[in-house]
Length: 399
Image 1 (cartoon, rainbow, N blue to C red):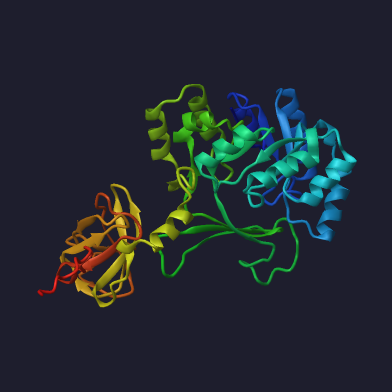
Image 2: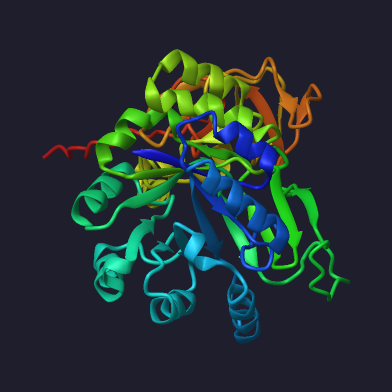
């Protein structure tokens, strides 16, 4: 198993050279959604990477309309494709063009938002044949599926191990509605905050290729490196482009691959600039949510319900969405999706912007100290209005 990462500058290359990483992904701003390199910079980095005995990989992942597809072909005709170790593509039309025009160029097919089933993945392997040398799998696949696919599929597989999770993409310009140009300098980055969940702040980027919204937590699977290795995955991708001093982070992460150490992982997690998540690696939480909807412990008991737990951060806090008003200090009872009853104290309660709260208003978000076993989707009741969640025995009528 090896790491792969993005390369954007000669200074980053100097840092990467000091690690065991030997594959770097290069992104031209006209070929890649997050690309920042112009042609001259790209050519310079190809030369530098090859001199450093690294494997430069070109990424071509923009949404290809007929016009952008033809523009991409024009640019590709001026690039030394033979100098790349491989080309990463997401659009099937792009992959087909490479198959026909450059059969000698290895393809890394990005199927993160495409095929999630084994039959579909095997079909692409059969169609592209030996030219297909890697599948970039979805971050939504849990460990059990990743292991199954990695062991059955006949080409190496890759997943994102650390970096931003893309939630939403559109080619439309949503941040700057007045911009109609494709000027490559048109770059905007904002943090969008939902009015009903102000504790979640979604990084959002707009560039010449459209608008991208990312998860408010970075995907972080580095504490599962031994498990990832056991799945049979070949490549773990590090996407640290949004972090400062990328080279520093890469050096710290690279050391874990050579000698895994839980203590080093904890230090790395504690210094990570954003909140982190394990995503779907341990379980598909969408499936779990559907199961919880069917859970009798999560039935809404109408007038007696005081609120819901919408976020639970272990050893830190709970975020409550209230349905009834109450006073600070009111004892609450939480009933978890598993049916466990837990006392939730409100002696210390704040608004999500950190202000102490006395009178708790219905329909607002509040933060209280974390309670063991309480998770998101826990139902919350006041102690004086706790529903009877135990099954009732049938009454026997005297004869």
